[in-house]
Image 1: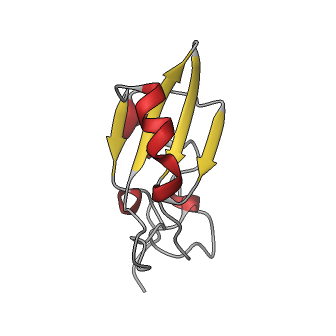
Image 2: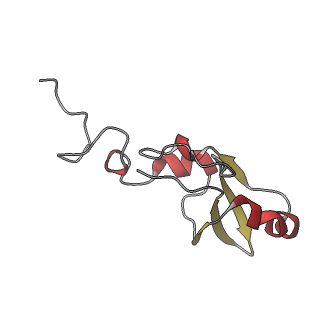
Length: 99
């Protein structure tokens, strides 16, 4: 049996958040060490938000994150965006996925 990678919680499945307990993947993807709010919404409902909030701080595929699969339902997007709203960090998941 091969040794478990360093820092992985016992029983963790490859690609799960147990491999990224400090959320370094979000930090690397967005450049922001902390977000204050996570919004999960249907992409069709976000058109007004996009227009009102303007330029994104960062964007990354949802499936880039450990343990997250790309959405498979029509109309869902494989996209996580980071916004700066008045000094607060807001992550917007533009699709739903199942583990």
